[in-house]
Figure 1 (cartoon, helix red, strand yellow):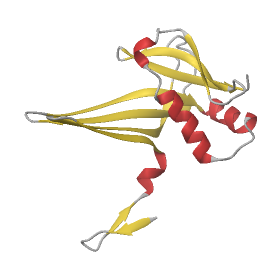
Figure 2 (cartoon, helix red, strand yellow):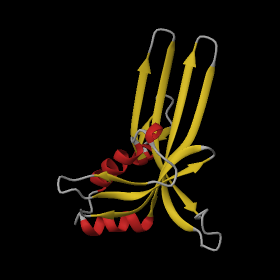
Figure 3 (cartoon, helix red, strand yellow):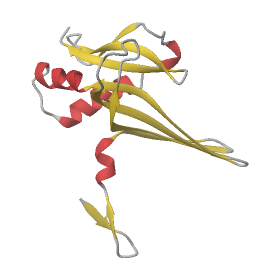
Length: 154
C-alpha cells in the first residue's frame, strides 16, 4: 500500500504493519517519541555454545528524546519470540488473527523490565483462561530481555 505525498511521490505505509505501539510524551522542555516494532532476527543460546542458531522475531524499542540542548536516539531489543512460540500461539489459540497476535506480543514488550531477574522464568498471560507466553529473562548488553520460548494454554 502507498499514499501520495504533496511532492507527488509515493510514500510506503508498509512500515506500520510491524509496529506494536507508538507513544509521544510532551513535557515542558522535552519531547519523547517511543516506538516498539517487530523485526526478524536470529538467536543462539549463550548457555549452550553447541546449539544452532534459531530464527526468531524480536521486539525493538526505539526512543527519540529531544530537549532544548540535546537530541538522543536509543534503540534496544526488549524481547524475542522463537518461531516455535509463535507457531504454538497460532495452534493453541485456534486463531490466525494477526492483530490478536501483535496485541499479545505487545503485552510482553510492555513488561516492566526493572523487575526482571536474569535467568528467572516468566509467564505473560494473554487470555482469561491463563494461557500465555513462557520463557526466561536474559541479559543482553547488560540489560534484561525477555526470551519467549513457547505459548501454553494454561
